[in-house]
Image 1 (cartoon, one colour):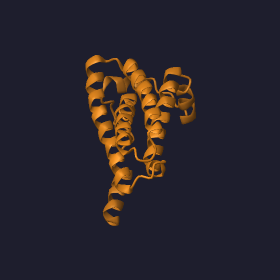
Image 2 (cartoon, helix red, strand yellow; image 1 turned 120 degrees about the horizontal axis):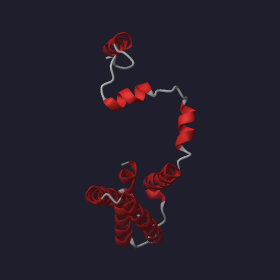
Image 3 (spheres, one colour; image 1 turned 180 degrees about the vertical axis):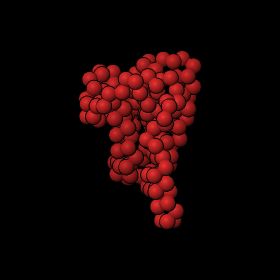
Image 4 (cartoon, one colour; image 1 turned 30 degrees about the vertical axis):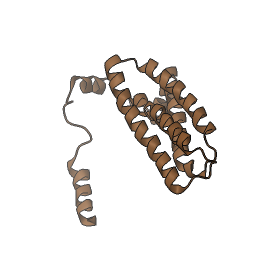
Length: 164
């Protein structure tokens, strides 16, 4: 495997060009004519000057970070649930999230109301976080799973909707 990978790497270095001799599209030709060599930090600072990008960046990072933290710490939440119950809760959160993302994709494709859908999803995600955290207690497994499903349904769809 190493030798095949090394040969492929050598072919890439010696026989592939950085860019084609002629631009493949009109937009690539325009970009090539207007090409100015700026560094990565200049481009990133220019990007962070766009207030709409900054709003999306922070809202996306908060939602993604909180969802990842929940997935990592689901077994350590208060409530003394067994590993199989926590697994069921995680599965409900993810499956409901996939279903919500599927429905959100159709809704966004039909309505093109990205801003409205994202605002509603973020608001409902916060409400579901409060509902989920208030249901983390002993002998409350059914409500715990239902709240996790609602949380997944409204939180997970914000991730692909933000990327679009």
